Length: 292
Image (tube, rainbow, N blue to C red; front, top):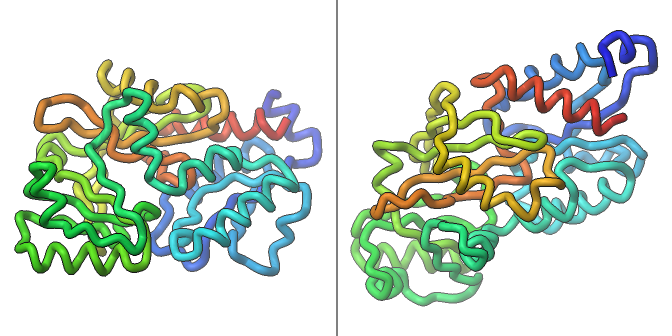
């Protein structure tokens, strides 16, 4: 639909799901609201956990900065299903529900997609981190929740003594499922690359600095994707591509030089729209098209 066509009808309505207060600023928020406004879309922010919000009304919802869901994932999953019953939800409910728990890394590996080697320690288990690392030949490791966002409880252990390592894993696993992964030194040089997917294809990537508990993330300007990144990103998203409005595949080289998936973000990833204006346009146009 043309811009003129949009201005001669009632504005399409859209809710953009967030959380309040935000744990950190969402630099994409105002950019997206303005891009939608000029396209005739009446969009407003709404906190997913706001008990006064009428989520049963038939208003489409775009999920963006719902970054506190990790503290009540059952309530968030219930909200996803509720919002999806009332009206279209982007990304779709099934996609998001399958992406909440990082066990999806094991599923990717099962499909033959190169991922960072991952041990899943289930809640209440206590295998001993030192023993686990010795068995896998790992020295420096990252320990983090299997359901997490930002850098929440993400820890880097560089050859830590066995007592401290075991104590950390025991503390985290007492409350939640935990992932243990070898630390990839390439994130300090090549950097972790976030590959941004919007409405049918990759738009750009950015280089992210390593980020651990309470750390601040540093992000580069937009970068073009290499052929290897394109192939790996497409392989990771392949079963879901026709369902996605947005997504992000975070990758880095392993010690062998093979590019590996570190995370697959399909719920509420930052899309780094400020770095690439064409990505913002593509997202806004994709939303308008879905609103009909």
